[in-house]
Length: 331
Image 1 (cartoon, one colour):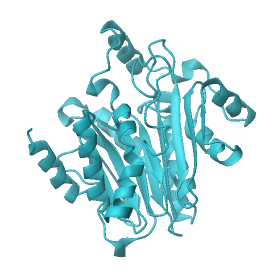
Image 2 (cartoon, helix red, strand yellow):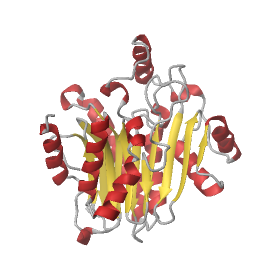
Image 3 (cartoon, rainbow, N blue to C red):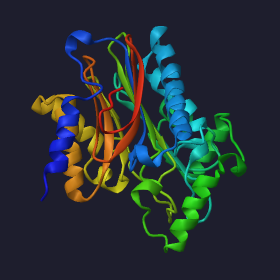
């Protein structure tokens, strides 16, 4: 097997935009807008500026919570909301279409201090799925609600619903049409592997939290759910580690990616970079690609991905930085 891509990624991780020492601990926010085939040559200057502005808006929303002394849980929620409201990302308003022409939304959130969690899957019309996941965590005895039941709970909780037209975007519709013409085969990397959004945060009290939101994969069928709403696969937070993942969901589920990454840090003493790389290498051996953002309780962090790029950003006392492509970029 050619190990050059692995060596290249390892080098990138050692220069990770999130890598800091324990002495730098303090409020930190990391976000991602999904990993995938993202090449500078394929993106116009206008599109790049739009994505960077959207990432900065998410960072600003989440960082303001942390700067005001708020909780990591509130920070990740605040960071996810503008990305769900943006048509650029595969979450909320910009979600991909199912094979039936609908938008089915998934999200999850986890409080590292308590290990309380909430998740929703296959939900239509809810403007901000991350808010519904949080309500599941805080206002129900459950962890995971799906489909019509989750929608009924959203209505009961008074969450904002939007008509189908609000979620319609030309780009996502065309992606679904192409996938359907190809016999609803899994979409290529540039069609469905990026756009999922996520956030992890460490607050001034040392508490960690993680949240992730997505529309799933283009032209998905039969109520397919990926890793995002599966606690321990796409999202995990405990007292020592917080993870949000993006990529080929089936493989992240099979690897229990997010929780196993944190277990490596806790039990094997691996750094966020080491654990992230080991986890992604295992997923790649299964056949999957993707990325993770990771924070530990001392502020050490990692952005790791086995794709050509990942929309990502970091906010801390030193400012806000964003990046998209792999080569030579560090937020």
